[in-house]
Length: 494
Image 1 (spheres, rainbow, N blue to C red):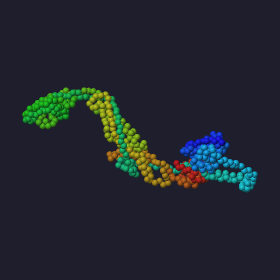
Image 2 (cartoon, helix red, strand yellow; image 1 turned 30 degrees about the vertical axis):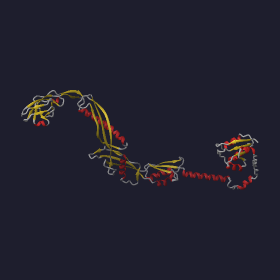
Image 3 (cartoon, rainbow, N blue to C red; image 1 turned 45 degrees about the vertical axis):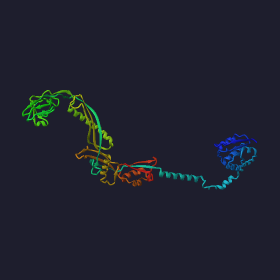
Image 4 (cartoon, rainbow, N blue to C red; image 1 turned 180 degrees about the vertical axis):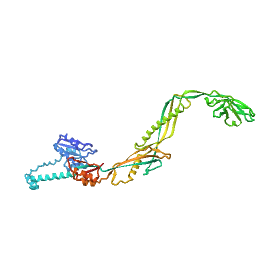
């Protein structure tokens, strides 16, 4: 008999083997297990393959030496052989015939069985009026529950109000560490650098030194010894105009011996032009042994008149630059602190001048004066939280029975801060807040529960000392009564 031999591979599973069986066209199909590779087919898989072979009209057989596969196949009645040669030579056992399942006949007494199991309801339960009454009671119960839990009310009360106001004298100091009810609060220091380059058009005229005054001075010996007068010896007038000798000279020995020496002013300008006999001072130790005078006036000192900045121009430009720097550094300081903190502007001061350069420098001409300046400023400030704490502490000191604060107090500085010599900044703080009479919510619930808004408004005004009639909002809008459950009533106080 023709036999289809199918050699299995290690990757084969139930689906792939079943597909291979479908291509067989012989009355016998022989599955050959590989000798060294492992094929995993469970007993259930073998049963499925056997049924699939039966559906194809073929008988399934196996060739394997694996003990577990042989036991599973024999339990299912599948012939097992040790080789393909034996399988083709030996006789195959016939497969057990498949048992056909014959369905049972349908039962004819199902209605009787149904009536036996399920007893018939009582007549009163199936009555239409009873059912309508029961449905009506259920609807009424649901509406009653909805009436308890669904309606909600918002009651806005306007109780009697009391305005509280006080002016607090405040003293802010760096040595204070905490807020005191006496008005002492801490002050904090911050610093910031600012730099600017600014120019000024110059129209002033200045005198620039052009030449030095020159002449001859006469030295007289006051001792018996010869005196060497070195070049660069400084002599001066009573008004401190100074001159310097140009040559080294020897003064002969002997009292009242004299020598004339060429001299010029130390600084150029007309201030070196002096009259005769006005140079009388010899600077240094030589002044003990010699005296000096000028027999003739010293002349030749002069100035050049130019357009250039004078001291007033420099002072004016410096003042403008400092004003600009103060405005610039004020903005920078405010950026460092919170917008609500109080910056004590009267404490703004120059901490250090880092750079100050004028161009052109003093003594030089020019039609434009430029100042480059960099300055470090410092100032003190007061925290907004400290001001709030001081305000609350002061307002809470006097007791107002039956009233409570409606909101946090508001405050404002009503006097400009001024700092004394000890570094304490003084100013006045005006603090105000509104107090509202306390409302007992339990009393409110007892008045309004289950009643209409028209009936409770006047009663609330009289019993709670309201300054105006309350505002009532009920949801849904068509509902005409306050809820009976207190947690469905929201009480707001304004």
